[in-house]
Length: 305
Image: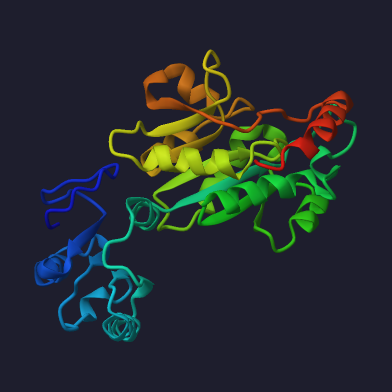
């Protein structure tokens, strides 16, 4: 709403069809609240300052609310009113926040770390191998979290992996892991909170991907005109590689996949769904003892991941 020129994916200045969020300037706040009152599928509102005196915010109960206001006392009054109305409130002491900050709020992305593989070529669970004084899988969790994912879920089948994850992420068990990667993808997506607009899929055995790669992919995916899926490419001549961000509209197709190929099955049939972004990390994974030795040699040089 309002005359905001924000190049967000999926933006529209018309009456939207289906679930959506609204962003409005303070001068258009009454119209925005009227919109919420008539559209139960409007999931939240971002208010951009300068804001008027606090109106009745009861319509925001159970919805997301972002308040952006430079006046601290007025900001506090809005926060208190939003909380009293039962809204899920976030706030910024800035009436004109940067685009990326608004994009993060409007298009939250959760991470699914696939960590339920058998690791048969290693002869032991590779995700528990020490890299830089912590289990390999913890580096992937750290990259997802520090890169900007709102929530991180790790799909596991080995209880030792769950123990290694600890409180660093949400651990989700896949009892059907032996059927292939597609089952873990399905379990991970089902565990995503309802407010997530997208999901980033990461492999648990790629510790050198890094948080910068995660942040670059999220930024590219949130931009207007981006394809439904955005994946990493580590050299210009390469095709797509994990991590990959998928908008929610693709989740049913992903959850219908079977076997061990995962998202590759989807992109082989519909290559137009994905675009690639050149990433600065490394896609090296760990399948053999030689791979692990290589990761150990490379890891100390990744200080600027």
